[in-house]
Length: 225
Image 1: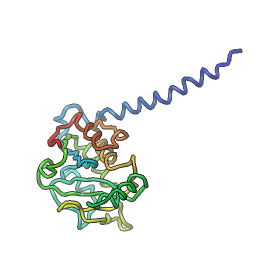
Image 2: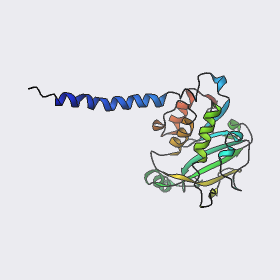
Image 3: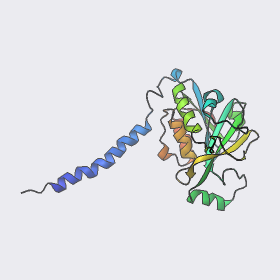
Image 4: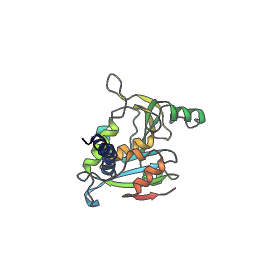
């Protein structure tokens, strides 16, 4: 009698990578009800800012303020820019190779950097690459919920100050999640952008260059450095 067991196993072995490719293709595309093709239906600007190794994301205050925890050190401005990273390396403007390697290899505590901006983003970050993406109100709300939920709160529900920020109107707060490669500031930013329905694939976004490359697909480059 013929043995069909091997024939049964072979399709199963092929099915798993095929399912992965289907899933990956879904991630690459836009979420239709959140990110319609017509730009007129996407009135909210979101900014992706690359500082070299690190990428952050910015949005107008009116679209995120109600989702942010209150703190006396929270910047006040027309636009908020957010970055996520290692709790020791990110706030230290003079951090050396040792701290960089520690952040890359070991799962470490994280922080969120909040920067208040009162001018066009591309004029504030003159040495950075800035890409603008337009999203829907609902997409902006989902991104705001994602960012607001990443603050590490104390027992009273308050955000926790971590360090003075890198800019005049900025502050570091303790954040949820451990930092390590490949879970970096760049994948964090891409996950925030993905909440808007934008066609970006976070698992590819380990480097800042890849985040910017994906943002350029349907975005407008305001400054290119």
